[in-house]
Image (cartoon, rainbow, N blue to C red; front, side, top):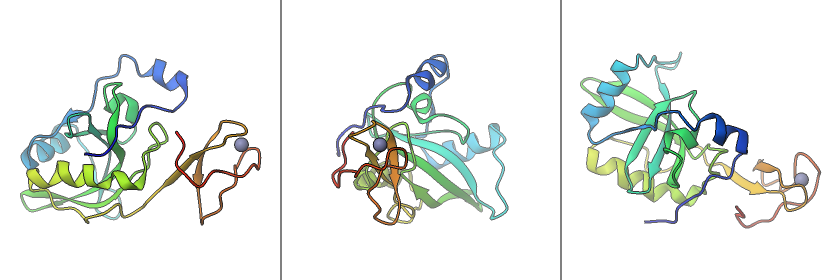
Length: 169
Ligand SMILES: [Zn+2]
């Protein structure tokens, strides 16, 4: 198992989500279908259902409505990975069609993928075998802002300082 990621986002979000319920633990593909149905999740124009997810400390998949904060989904605990999934309902089952490590609360590395695969594989939920969208997060060592690095451009969007090439949360 890879390392745990601690919450690195703003404190107001932490405080605001103190009472929010944690994400639902998914123990089978049927669980996931049932959660989609009971919470009234709707597919987007592409036929995909976006959800917030984390892989919790125990290596288990937890999901929440897309509008949820990752820190709430985690139950205010560290995670092994976090991001967004785009699910497709196929017959009686459900598949992960797209998945990213897009979580500005935990800023997980793309190398956290194996934790995601290890959570999905025992459930028999098909997935792309990688993050279909890999997000590179860095903290600016000058102003402290969390940045998403785009096109290998390691420059802080707030103060213009150079960003480190190593993950630094
Ligand atoms: Zn900066």
